[in-house]
Length: 282
Image (tube, rainbow, N blue to C red):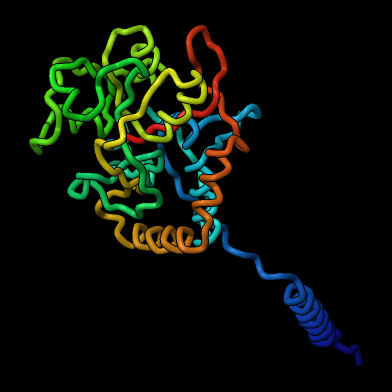
């Protein structure tokens, strides 16, 4: 009688497949689990040395870049910095093209427009005059010619004059070029300029005391990271980590390297001469 081997063959094949499947399962379980990719956040700002600039290798660098990278590292995010025209920041935040603006951005008077994380740095805006001037106080700026940076806090302050102690200048000029603040003053085109105190101190050193900083500041400015109003949870995370970085000395350590010239940045002055770092706050 002829035997039917088909059931036996099918059983053997099924057994082999089960063994192979079991072996593959053991092999897969020995591999490390695939980690989910870190979420990437896009931060925006313009080229604004020493807070944001491109180094000699073509990479973004600066005070804000270092702070941004450290904050993202602590929170488990990857970060990308997108250089944008400064006037496009609101449109790009609103569209979601960028997650936040981090570029020496002052929080003062802007609570209704952005959700802020910070401040991560507090700075003073001051008035700079020539060393032989008779301008000795803010009151002496009444009827004078003053130059400021476009869309900066000093510009807003001197234009709006919301308090009586703000001087009523005769002419207020605005420039996009930080060097113009000091070249215009040196050439006698204006009587004074106004900017961040760190800027003034740097240019004092560059020009060997050609400038004098008035003792009374125009205002105190608080720098923060601007999110759109619908990103409150993300804002809160960065607000907490910024406080942590201020408390543990991280912010001060990064800032000191730039103030002491350890991370030197060039800025254009005159016929493309390379000068030391300048600090501006908007």
